[in-house]
Image 1 (cartoon, rainbow, N blue to C red):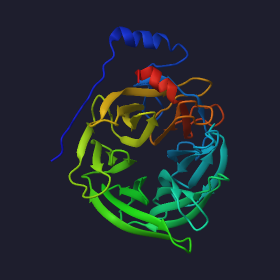
Image 2: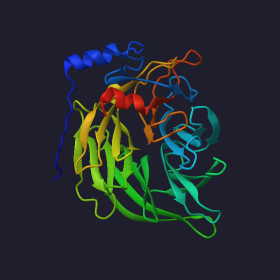
Image 3: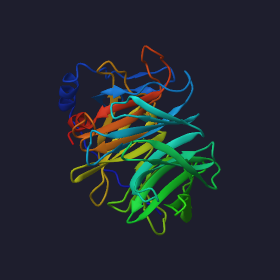
Image 4: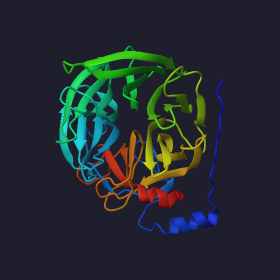
Length: 362
């Protein structure tokens, strides 16, 4: 059986009033977009920038982002974003499009660096792919920032949906889950012929549809979002067991669907961020201790000439210097962009981690 642990951090009414008063450039009023998604349910945090829109107006296209930063030169890096109808986008750290890789129907994307190949170390990029019926693998060259399609690993799921990656020692894992709640964990490597090798190391499942997942190698934990029930924590390797439900949905923390999950490292602190799609907010836990500690919720609101985030789906985060962001970057899918050029299409919004820390008192 699982256990439930909830840790709350409250803000007094007077403190909340002061916070909102200091955010005059925002629009924190609760409202709904044209798809009925609640806007601004979390503590308001300004959006800093955005990517170009993608897909067709009114079509569900953009889904999940991921971030890679060159540790030796944090001005270099890319943001990856899936178009689940057609392919994978590559952006720079300011959100400008660099490339587009058509093919498949990639849904969730994740990566791990230091992946050995015959041509040298690469960044392993993986995406759950309903078009290719498995996990699509890409290789990112850290020298050129070029991303190329590598191969597809077939996965015996009803519909490959969520995905995350992990690195434990020299082992690289691609973890894929399906719309039926089933999970497959594959160990992946590159052969001498530069073709992928993989072996399934474990399989387990949850009762209903899953999607978002993220690995915390530092604590040996795997977090998986069950869309209409909450966030589960499992051991990253070994027997999965029954898991632990660390946050229930619906609740004051999460309003279904539970969507993207990501982890941000900020010095000695590690933060789990989860998309609460039902009210367009992001819930935050500190997870470097013995148990996750809930620290509040935020919403990306209109600022700097950019509209806010609605219908939150995928989310990615990276701590430390990320391009022009000195302490970290959060990238979130926006279900309905309100830009003047092509309103109603989808894109990804960039949020300065400093603003989240300031808003939630982290």
